[in-house]
Image 1 (cartoon, rainbow, N blue to C red):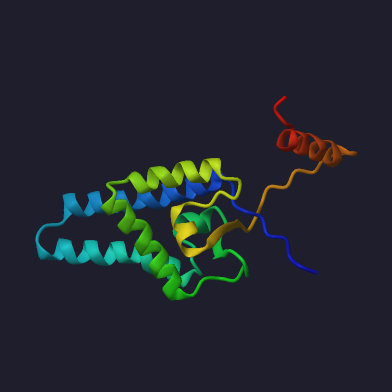
Image 2: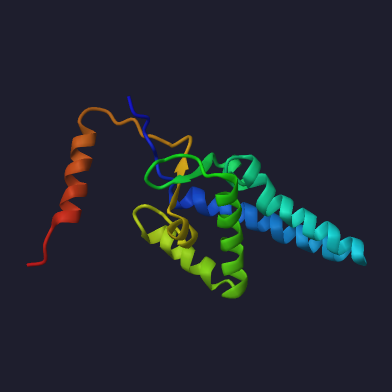
Length: 162
């Protein structure tokens, strides 16, 4: 029997990202205001490497935010975990795009995640990955509510303009 895969919803993905990004910014400000000299640069570089690249690599692609919100990136077609080098490239691409576009890539990714039905972002499309929810909230409906929901969902997607 094949295991069900649930795509992570927009709210969980954005919360995990905000947690990761907030921790990165907080770490930069803490280092900038507390340390002085060459030691500051070394600690900042090592700390950022740990937060952004090493933790996801050790946790099969799960950053701290993804760990807390029970999310995990997988290959799109095969649903297999990413290799360590794919995780490194995915995170590096995400942050390089952020720096090179002055944050515009993250704004585009935010709207892509909110509007696309598969909730994939820019770096997901580049690396052909998707983020799944390891602990989805499944609603337990009474009676024949599933059939009614399915009817209305199909009605909304198949109706035509007259």
